[in-house]
Amino acid sequence: MTEDEFDAFYAAAFPRLTGQLYAFTGDHGEAQDVVQEAFVRAWDRRERFLADSAPEAWIRTVAMRLAVSRWRRAKRWLELVRRTPPPETDPGPGPEYTALVAALRDLPEAQRMAIVLHHLCDLSVEQVASETGAPVGTVKARLSRGRTELAKRLGGDEADGPVRKESGRVR
Image (cartoon, rainbow, N blue to C red; front, side):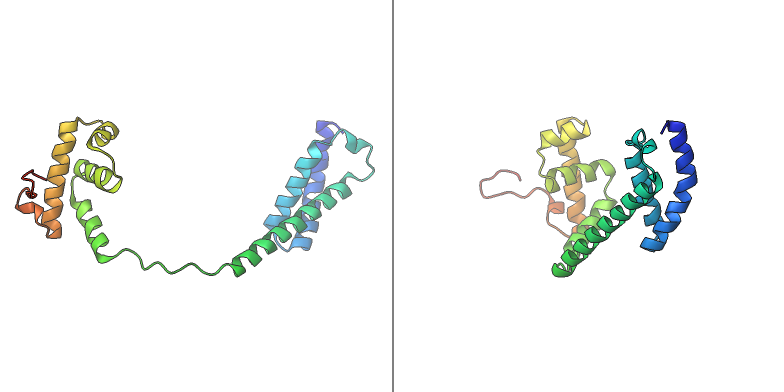
């Protein structure tokens, strides 16, 4: 079967086969999918279709087998889903997390990015600088200003100034 003959065969047989597979599957979209897949597989065998006496029957058989395989796969998936217990309910973010996110939203974007990358993604100051394209000193300033602003909004003590540790170093 030449390409032109195959195209003519496809144009004539596709609607008919889709209708037949729709009756078999009960789902028009599924019928179109399996018939199309069967035609794709037939395309590779189009030279031998001339010898076959019933190429439409071959495509119908392949399409029906594909539909049955999909049903089996769906059935196995459904059985697996039924056997799997439902996941534990996630209580969602706590009030502290919600307050932090709200406070972060109020920060300027550059400060927010520096805070998130450094404190939540655990990147070093140098890595934050590399990722944002800002100098290290600028990142340090953004972190300091961002932490101060967050402390004010969240009611922390960093707004009062740097905290000294027992060693005498500034934190």
